[in-house]
Length: 446
Ligand code: GAP
Image (cartoon, rainbow, N blue to C red; front, top):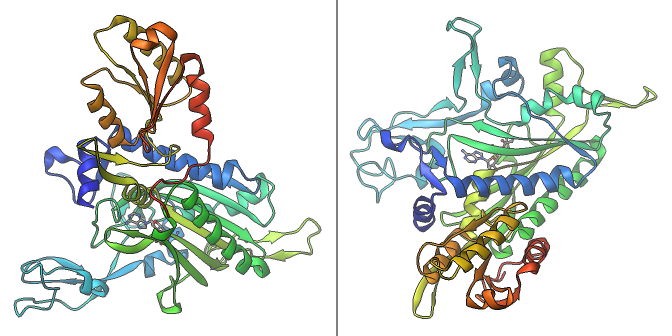
């Protein structure tokens, strides 16, 4: 993980937030390449979940919802972690994770293990961030930043049913920020207090819920394989009854083997009719499906795949990271899927002082940038320029050299195989589009 954090910092993917003020724990800002990777992950998710299907529509609900939403959802009462304080080292720990925590004074021990440790009794700590709505902090003005995007979907169920004219099975998808006052955030972006969730609530006839639950576990697992994660680093783990959230009739985690060990990448839950029933009770609005004849009437059950861009971001970078020696020199390379890579191609004039090469390279760059994110780079030796692109995961480089001036051909260099071949400059745009459309498998094997 340290190598990933350092690469992200060095190449401007991710910075500690508010760094000039000393940073704010577990909060991060994204630089240019980080924004591009996040945007690619979001787009690939939207393609698979919405654009390439007929049965899922989008919503973008507010971050601050009516406070009653969180009473109905069970978050005010139940979205808590057990917390203990150490009176000696003043650190806070999750009472259910003491085994995995480090004592503030003796990091080789766990809290409570040394005679100096003085832990308080466990108490429940609500993870929602509170705020007040309006200028005066008076009773009734208390509100919360949403800890999940899902509830904004449930409270709009009736709108979508009527206005988008849907009938189960159908889904509503949302991408947006969620906030949790995590007691023990950490491991870079893995557990942060502000993250971008991608959630989809799929409403189904109750009798079909098990079948759709299995369908979405498989569909989401395949999505990770499609975008290059190694199968050997992915697994599905079904929760036992004691582990499930209050709303869940069944939950499976798609886990990735992060450097911290196997951990939840995405959750797929069968939420039953819990949410629609609770919001019907609390709001007085019936949230149910009524068939066209009026005879068919039921509360749909909900299958929910839920993930954050941050967890995918870390998994993809970890999976893609490689160090190797090429011709006696170290190179660091991110073998990202081309559809996830922040920059699709680099255009490089071999000699920056050669105006003929620069002119041709700039013209090629202008042509490619109208369709893809590409970079033009003329700074430094060609080997160093290739290595800069390898480090950010650019899958292709087009180099304009002496020969280009004679016959209008350039070289195309493949990031992973390092193979180079020549092609006519007029074929570059079509070739790049072709390469980016092809199915891709990681060269790191399974
Ligand atoms: N609506 C259901 C829900 O929110 P969850 O398991 O609490 O379920 C869903 O969260 C996903 O959101 C997780 O699988 C993970 O990908 C992501 N996630 C949750 N907490 C996170 C955090 N503190 N930092 C980054 N991602 C987080």
